[in-house]
Each structure stands twice: as structure tokens, then as C-alpha cells.
Length: 397
Ligand code: PMP
Ligand code: GLU
Image (cartoon, rainbow, N blue to C red):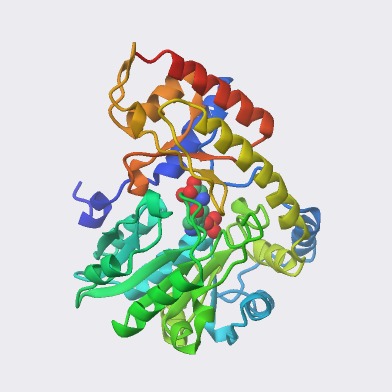
């Protein structure tokens, strides 16, 4: 069979694949500690579930407007105005089946062969493949761990060519947990304005912040920046609603309309029931999220402290999201009965087989020296997983 070339350009999502591996082993009764799953372990709040039940009972179970119900678009606009001072007409908001789908619609609406998209490394796995799927070229902008993964302005400038169409900004970042402050966002915005770039601002972890940090959307820097930015967000992380599949984009009308047209010809509307649930979530205030983040914070300190005690591993304290991203290059060259450890992928494989601990290797995030461990799991599981990793490391020659 001759498939389209684009199908051969991408790999299955490595994060979803590893989550599936961990969950399948657990389902078979294998005692695996899962640090791979990038989703809150909390249950969706009851009032959100109640709204979904009410939607089902009242027969709100049919197609909706393809781009989302007005009630949800209003809840999204109100949120963006209240929190970031951003004003969007409902025609500038598109509700999709998760933020990943929002990003996909955006890539389809914007990109074609020859276009380039700047992606700061390390990056969330799907950015690169979505660019490739749409025949465009990802241009990786390296950032350094020692500099807190800050974007170097001169390096950013050097990535821009006449074919550059967009830059992706992900703050807080999956996988590093780094956040961009106002000055960093201003520098990116200035380059975007000067070179006429679209800014894709993935803010899905905006509410998972520690040590009193506050989220600032790059679009909030001013009307010129807002006019070229698509704010991407959703309810998956802030309200523990990953399975409900509701994400959204807000931005320039022309671009949002093109994305909405693509959605109307591909998936139609996101689930009517989930949309009602998302309205309840967005209107519910921050109490649930605050409590969840308080718990993540406790786990964050525990996992980072323990990782830093392991010889050959060093780990920065993430400022946001729920991932530890330890540097494991100090272990490269070590050996076990199972073979040599030369890469992060080798080490992840070793931890899975030897310690029954699932982690995601750094390579698909654009970093060969790191592992990603989600700490959106219980303190007990974190302790058990780290004990086992320590024991496995002790066996290395
Ligand atoms: N962006 C980032 C950085 C993410 O980590 C995720 C979750 N995997 C998404 C977008 C997509 O989230 P969802 O599709 O569940 O809204
Ligand atoms: N946010 C998660 C992760 O990065 C979910 C999996 C995915 O959609 O990639 O692991």
C-alpha cells in the first residue's frame, strides 16, 4: 500500500505510547510505578460531573455549532478578560477536542510546504510532528539547562528566515517546567513583530505554578502582539479533565475562522456534554486547582530532592507544570547485565525492565540528556518508584 508521504514523516506520540505501555503492564497485574502519564491523577470535580449528567438528562446530546457553543465561548472570553485583560469577540474563539486539536487545526490553517516554525527546545513532543504533518519544517531553537532554558535573543534572531511563519511559546513548559517572565516574553514579541511572525502561545499549564509565580500571557503585552497571537488552552490540566477533550484557541479572526472551517470539515463539534462540563469548570473559580497545585508542590519538592541525591543525576526545581526533568548524562557509559547505558532512551528502558518504573526519555522532547518524570501521582508511588530507581542504579557497573 502506498501511504501519503506525511504519514511516514511522523511517529506515534511517544508520551501517549509510554502511558499506554505503563497502563497495559499495570492492567496485566505487573506492579509498575507510572511516572510517564502526563495528566493530573485527581478526579474531575463533582460539580463539573453534575453539569455533564444534567446535559445528558436534558437531552443536550446532539450536534452543536461546529466551533463550540456560545455559552462556552463566552466563559472562555470572560476568563481571558478577567485574568489577562484580553478581549475577544466570540468569533475569535474556537472550541476543539483538546488543546492538541486546537494546535493541529492551527497548523493546518497556517502552514504549507517550505514554511518554517521555530520551536524552542526542549519541547512538547507533538509540536514537531504537527508541523511535519503539515509539510512544513520545524526549526529547533536550542535553550540551555544552565540558563534555566531561557531563550537567547541572538539565537532566536538567527533562527528567523524569510520562510519563518510562526514561533511556539509554551510557558509553563512541558517538559522542563520553565516559565518565561515579562522580559523574556517581550523579547519574543519584539522579534515576532519585527519579522511578522504568528505567535502560538500554549498556556495549558498556566495554573500549575509554584512559589507564588503568576501567569502572564504573551498576548497581554499589547494589542499588536495580541493581533498576531493565538492563545491555546483547555480544561485538561487545570480541572483534571484530560478525558473530556475540550481545548480552545483565541486569536485573530481570520485565522480562527480558517481553523473553524477546517474543524467543521473534519471533526465537527467537540462533545456537547463535555462542552457543558467545561462551562462549569471555567465558571467554578480556582479553589479546586489551588488545592491540586498545593499537593503537586509537595510532590515536586520530594521528587526533586530525591533525584538530586542519586549519583549521576541532577534535577532543577521546575517552576510550573508537573514534570521533573532530571539530567542523567552522568550515567552514560555505565553498564548493567542488560547492556550499556549510552542514551536517555537506554536508561528509560533499563528503569522499566529492571525497576518496573515508567519514565519518558528526553529524546522525543529534543533533549538526549534527560528523563521526564510526571509527579502527578501519589506521594506513596513517588517514594516507591524512587526507591526502586535507586536500587536499579546501585546495580550499574
Ligand atoms: N500542550 C502541552 C504542552 C501539553 O502537555 C498537552 C497535554 N499533553 C497539550 C498541549 C494537550 O492537552 P489536551 O489536548 O489534553 O488539551
Ligand atoms: N500532557 C501529556 C504528556 O505530555 C499527555 C500526553 C500527550 O498528549 O502527549 O505526557
